[in-house]
Figure 1: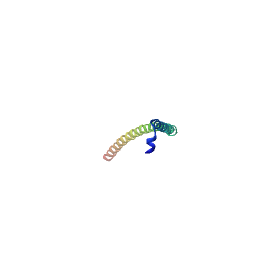
Figure 2: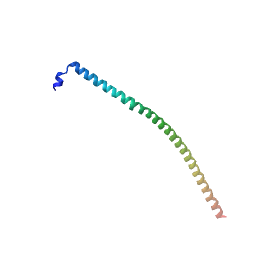
Figure 3: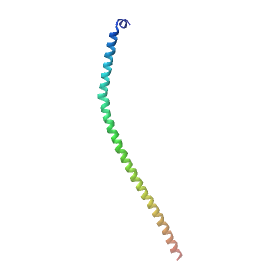
Length: 94
């Protein structure tokens, strides 16, 4: 308490100025050593996600094409099944 009473306004301004400079320096160091390198890694990660998303879209499109082909084969098989049933019925009637 005694120290506070003995400090003048100029002394307080100096303490605040020094404190502000130290905080500013620490902020700059954190930005240079931590934030900037992380931003580069985040950009790379975003690019990788974009590439992965494109690959997933292509895979989904290919899957849909294959699914359509399988469905068409199912229809063809059903048609052949009906034709075989018809032929067997005709063979039994003769």
